[in-house]
Image 1 (cartoon, rainbow, N blue to C red):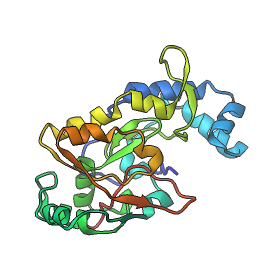
Image 2: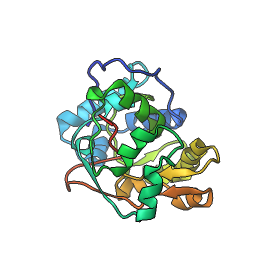
Image 3: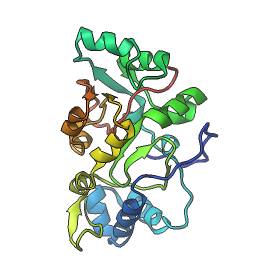
Image 4: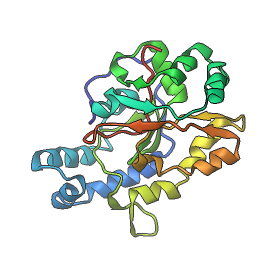
Length: 242
């Protein structure tokens, strides 16, 4: 679910999505679909399908908002994580060896179980932290920072679209794996090691090749995301009131 009502002010400047060109290709491919084809992909009723079609048609002229303010719904209101880490891991994380900074914030982040992500009610400190440390996995944009400027859309990761890769249709999950989402995320560690907290559903986690992180000395958390069967999520964790 997306909320594109006027957003609150942000403590950071809007940024440009890493895979902006790819997102534009996906939008163009979706715009070219008939309403019937789009409805089949989205599994939506005529009213919602028409709204989605209009959003893609207006992609080039509509204004975007920071991603952290655009995403909402049950998937972002409650994500419960089950710990599977060792006492040694917990001690290390609490000692502040996570991202090598913001010890108090990250200690809280690493030791809580129930996480909420509601950008429009988060403090400036939490929003800044989210922009620096949190990444969303997304069917249209691939990887997003909290402050990345995005357009309104509705899309499924399992959709088959002609996205300009050799003139053939490709499922978006396969497309994003081939676009090296993992390399994009890994580059942010700048060879300094660290820890990757994965709170994405299996559908979105499958976009990432976790072995490249481990080979680069980045520890991948063993936390598992639980969610209600009817909710959807991307890669999220609690950033409010840390």
